[in-house]
Length: 208
Image (tube, rainbow, N blue to C red; front, side, top):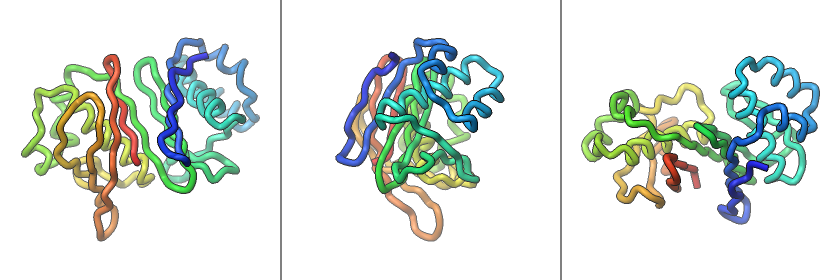
């Protein structure tokens, strides 16, 4: 079993982390996938992608205590079919994570840190953020990128631009903590709290 942790974030939300140690064939044998999901799996050509796809479903099953059938809306935002529980998923390197919450949208993102992220900083940093970020702080840069991905997933709107529509407020600390993000979707900005954690060579962020 690849479960690393299942944390209770609030009375209505859980965050799970899974390390991908099993080949996808073993994961498949442990899951009772319906025909619709088997058809999706058969359309995935890469072995790694199959492992990620199945690991997310294995983790969701452990968190829910039952098999989970995951669908996608027209904006590619995932949802649990036949359930009021909201879901967000992410994968990077050897890990996948799943975030579940009743009654409200969620977003989660995990990133394996790479030394070259600053080269693409102007792709996702806006002028406001460039005034305070340290482009040489690799952890900070990955936390900003990951937080924007989490907010993007939370919003569920494919037209959102990470640079234009998501603004990170200055924060300190790079091990674990919380900071605020503004999402400009519509006429009024929405303030979103982001929780973050770091471990090994990874950063993990999720909406609150």
